[in-house]
Length: 153
Image 1: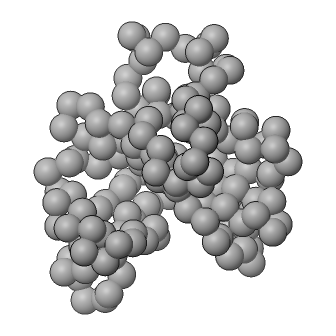
Image 2: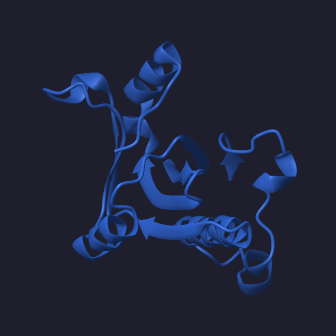
């Protein structure tokens, strides 16, 4: 996956290692399965560094440009199934994430993405995995480039 986030200065950190290489075969996995395996490896690395970690697969991911609705809310919008939403609420009730990284891989016209949200002060890490069709991303990409930032919801 492409690394565009936390600890970016260490490019070796971006290469998944450990369980992913031993337990899975990229030739037979779907892109979604590969992304989940990569997310699990990144989460394990954070846990080894002393972080409390939650990993969540989104049931839907939408690239929302500002013009997509009545609010100014824009960015990657993740929808979690209720059982995962409950896990998120219990795990991070009053957390302010101060650092975010986005990692992605493209396949078959889709972008498979993992967003990592970090609270270094409380050693908490959240990983959310999702996928969306690239054809719907252009307006969001233009906004993010123009404003030099991206939001996650």
